Length: 361
Ligand code: NAD
Ligand code: GLY
Image 1 (spheres, rainbow, N blue to C red):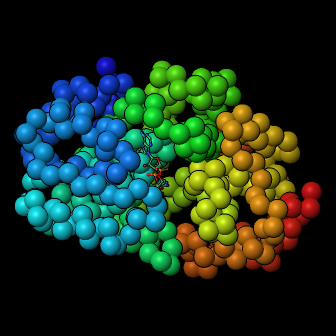
Image 2: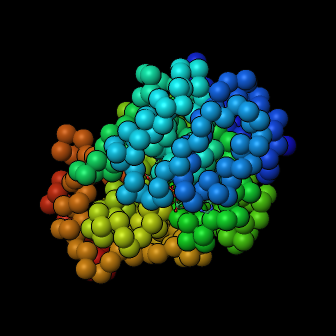
Image 3: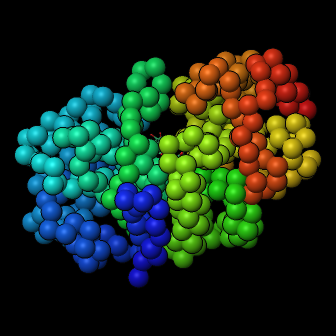
């Protein structure tokens, strides 16, 4: 039996199913596919692991399968165009259902292809990394990268459903699992203190991939994300809270050319920096960041930025983040564990001064 949640967006509402064995049980898939033709987009790494189960469950509905090369460097317009070529070659029409099977790179790229092909075809997210299961498959952000920046070309385009089969996590590398756990911890920190406490009590179970613990953590993460997206689909306000730790994290990723840390690892460091910043700014009681630091450390995630990154380098990269609006860098800070807010109170000089203070502590 799968846990079923809803992302409530009026006519574009959709379910998220979370459970074990969902890719091998035909019932759910057949119900969603409902007799339509299907095209599956996956990757060269994920397809050999899970495509067989998916295809077997869909009988003769699959018109074609599209395999993308693995890695963030292939999340680009060239690959997007090759997906369109294959959709055309397979004679997909507007009634075709596109299934995205893979991590966030596959989900974002295939989702954007679905948004554009013939002005939009239905798509189903089947995320196979923890990060994709708790974050990227939910909420309708789809995109590819441009040489000038990540996710620069994309659309808000909601899937028809999300199927999270936690059994797919059994093949995920430990480091990728921990990177997903960083995003799970984020939900506790920004808006769900009881979930943060649960994570403090159960982090070892999650790391050992206990299925019930994973299902619970994914469910709580998706409930939080679904509530935020339902309130602010296009990131005019509250949805920005989901970027907690990301402004600092993106600065670290760009300064290190995306080679040193995975996204979730950089976010973990960024969340700790945002908490230290909150303590210095006086919004968060001193010492509270220690709880987050201890949990993030137990998850095996990194705790500090590279020692050669100073305050000026951070602000330079933070300024180039596409979430900078009207030249103002928006920081997501905490009032407490479970209570985040957006602050645009800092100009570059103040930011450099606060960050310099943090680094010299
Ligand atoms: P990813 O898709 O690159 O997957 C990480 C690695 O795990 C890849 O090598 C992949 O082949 C492999 N993999 C996937 N599933 C596996 C499995 N079950 N077993 C073994 N290996 C598996 O990275 P990711 O962390 O899933 O996603 C990162 C991407 O998501 C970035 O492009 C980021 O911009 C995007 N993202 C989007 C949103 C959104 O709201 N749309 C949110 C967060 C991140
Ligand atoms: N990952 C941030 C968002 O979906 O808004």
